[in-house]
Length: 440
Image (cartoon, rainbow, N blue to C red; front, top):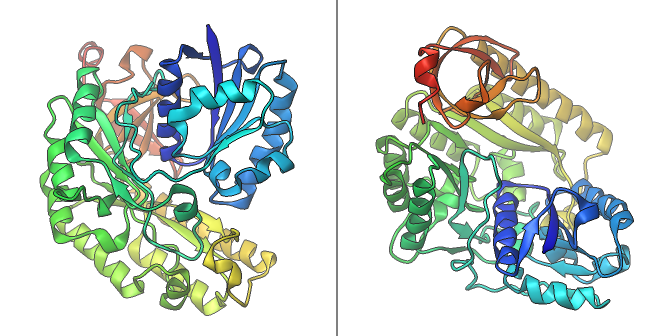
């Protein structure tokens, strides 16, 4: 029996790709192990969005080298592998295998070649590859499931490496996505998250993202539909109508803004300005009452002035995001931003990052305090990290900690929100415990 050990870094797409890798290798007789010392193959599924993510992987490969035995293969897969290609062998000579996101179908043969002591790589883009015939091996214990509906990206944001690591945008056929979701529902999965680099630009030649939401949302057994990450430019009226009308689509959207300054957005190549973004927010909130909105923000982009940053802070206050992923600009070779003049010093960028984080947290805390006392439906996901509590999530993507037995994992409960730390909630089940134990 062959064993494979995989570590996954980065976005939900990488998590889904790890499940693809496990499925592909499973067909070749591999089983997953959580012990690198027991593995015949060690893979690190990587992210290339930020420089520190790559540095972390390089360091981790040095640590995994200690677990190598003769014949054991150590490989880098994913976006970092695609970006660096065979130069990874120079940076980390102990790495045997480098495979990009379109090369997972050939992993069994590539691993066999690497096991013979040869450096092996596959970083060729394959515009036809959707892995339709590869059975994904879902991570045990996860309540929901990620469903990749689109790969690649045709936007060329000047800060983003994704088009160079994932290739051109292409969408799966709606019928193929629907078949996967129906199979998941048959296995008892009740929540699915549709994944794509700009997921709401999905189009399979006949059907758009609105059609996809209608179809997936109608699958018997599916109670919640989420998606990430959309682009503000692709929220057509049809898509927003589908979000409002399909009862299973959750009242949460992650809507990256990156900057509140139209001047900076233009330098970023985002193809919208501040007012267009705010108009999109207004359209979404008008159609979907109670919608929670989260976002991505980059500070310290080349040429960003204090005036530009103030515009970002004011947009955060105006939109009142429920949460935000905030980043200091990280230059990536191969992107347009590395050629832009007027870099922002690390000290200034760091100060702006602290300020925008404080603004986001203050707004989120205030909004969450206003929810204390409310009743919410939650899906219990797993055992929480602290105190033996259970972690659950509302339709609006709020995390709630509840006290109860592990048998509740996978159940939908009605809880009363009793308190908040500002980021997460404490909740008490409202339904009788006898009933909760059998809700699925």
